[in-house]
Image 1: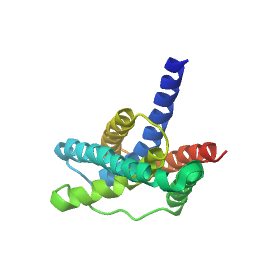
Image 2 (image 1 turned 180 degrees about the vertical axis):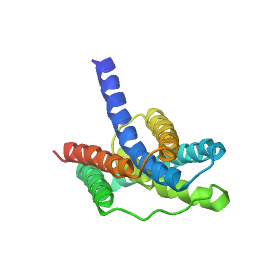
Image 3 (image 1 turned 90 degrees about the horizontal axis):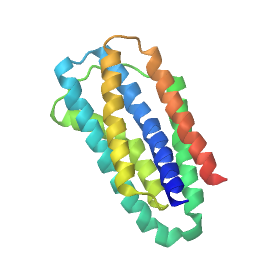
Image 4 (image 1 turned 60 degrees about the vertical axis):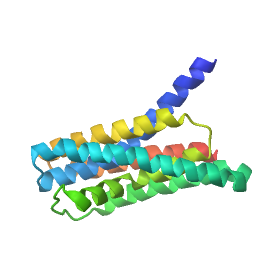
Length: 184
């Protein structure tokens, strides 16, 4: 029974990591479309991966701290955060955005990685309210953030922006579904 629970947690964390990676993927598509040198793809992807580890760790720490104050409301708060985050991603994907040029250097790179990873902070906060395998969660978040950002950057160099909007919407629907699951 314990092994099944571990696989269940792995599958859940993998799906959430993929949903979070969708945001990095869609933004990577946009940046790739605007133009990024091939040699910078690995640098940008690795930085996003690192932020996808740091941000949820900070969120989990804060979530564990809040658990002592809110007790039984943890499930409702966590579900509400995921639900809100999913709705925001879906809304953002349908409202569209403007493309910007991007230079992967210094503070610009850090700010870009930070903004892409804000969603992982919120999910980390939610997971801090529950008992999750922290090492597994942040490893999957970082790995999927890096892989999906790199894939988005590479595909963005070749294809149109239309896929980026659908990628963010799909990620939003996955987070929305997990938010509803936590609320029920």
